[in-house]
Length: 232
Image 1: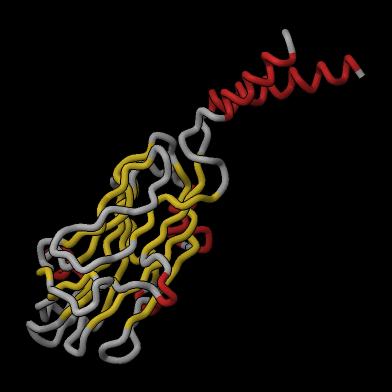
Image 2 (image 1 turned 120 degrees about the horizontal axis):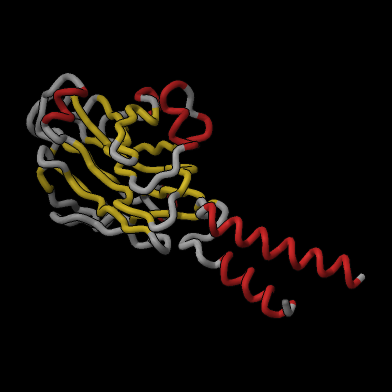
């Protein structure tokens, strides 16, 4: 078989995965002040983003800053379970991926006003299965009354039940930033522009080549190697 043909075959097969192999940005959001939802401005090929949006328990609030996605939390619910039931959360992630991916890292920024919320949680619905507190609640704290904070997670470092996240091929992933414990109905939460003007929410992952594609690519490479040995 001509070497040129085999080379072309390897290039074609290796290019059949929708995402580049190796860690890449899956979805990336930059917030604006809007009553609607916000699409990912940088979405990987083959990935269908979920817009950054509000659960039904959050009420859109205008912001004096054009880069803050603000909501009236308006709840004194004291538990995470009650907040989830009331849909007091932001959602983001991706709804489908033509090539399954392994989730790598997530970083986000968030804030609150003087009335709360007092606590935040981050859950993940991965391929329809719920994983709770993928960033521990004690790492989702806002220091001060009206300040903003940031948090990140490397999924490969998670333990217990959540350790499965890093090794589960993901075809869909919906994150929920949940808030509870406001002191009165004027409590607000928001996702602001990150420090330094970078992206406000960034999710990265690694594409998994389909087995058949990987086998074909391996066979093509083996044939080329064999021909090199025989012609050396």
